[in-house]
Amino acid sequence: MPDLSAFGIEPQDPPAAAESDDDDEEPSVQWPECVDCGYVGREVTGRLNQSVPLCTACFADREGLL
Image (tube, helix red, strand yellow):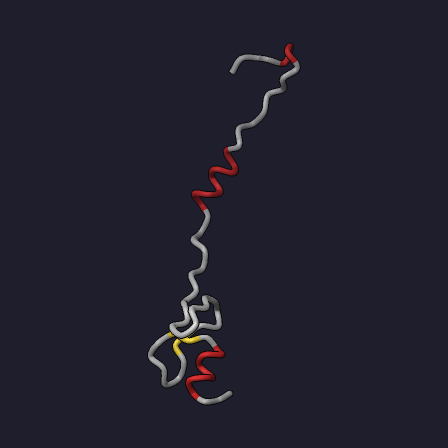
């Protein structure tokens, strides 16, 4: 890289850190989706006596707990 300091331009490091962070970044957590309402989150899981992933509210509704 040529010396451009005579023109008032200071050398800068390339943004290599930002590029390498994308490569090293772990994939984000993929939460399951509730089959009844479509909510995606950590509360969605295979519940007792249910073979499909349900959120807390849909599980309670199916089990008659509300």
